[in-house]
Image (cartoon, rainbow, N blue to C red):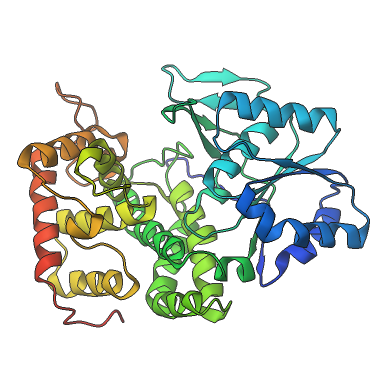
Length: 401
């Protein structure tokens, strides 16, 4: 039988004003002197709340401001501050780049999988506990054992993989409720892919690029729960976010966006949803202004995968209706793409076809062909056009139930 692996954070804490309880949670883990890395917006949103919670139980701490980008220089700066202050944990508060930086600075061993063969570091960071505090529920990255490192100019330079997931993840839903609504919706787009990618990876007996093993039934069940929560609570969560109220919808969807999607993608596997979503970034000249958020791109990639799978119209209607109801893109225009040519779509499709994630799709090759493809890119082109056409013709004829 094939090896199966499940990855997860050691501890997950969620609820309104959860950060006021951070001191007690740190005490449970024996942490006495954390270094708190904060982005400017996170410092304003949660800095005083964290300080009050730690002061209440007498835990020492220090703050350090995030420099803005996850670079080698920034990682080294935070790591050195941690060692010099004799801190026993790094608490990263903010968005993805802040959390990526803190995760790198906190880790012990690490591996850069952008290199071939992978570059192994026996001691990369300070070797202390990693604690993540996402201030938006826009992605599932805070639960994972991966960080992306960029050059000073913003080009991806390394994908760092760590042997363990974060020690603890804090999701304060009172903070999430006050974050931009579009970011919560983008998180739903990222989470929407979880079940379909995990299910496809399982059905093709493929391996997760994170665990390098096959999925457990537990991971499959978590991925399905993620999908069910979105269908049940997605519209309600958006309404609560618009009112800045941490109600039951936000509670449910925050758990889906951050925890269940994180466990599902890492232990269940990724597939065409992410491969296609990422590939759109290779035609930046066709976006009107700034490219969409990660979750918005992945949402369209999910619709594309469902078309590639040949899903029946009644099921497509359900997913298209959900995307329309919460505000996720269902057409090229919804992605703010303009002046698209066949050449541009072929470029997107070829990038996706060469992505190792496509190896999990039904009909994919186990090895790259002479063009470096795991999948016929012309089939992806046809699916992209069909997805856009379905989205333009869709009239919301089925509710998202």
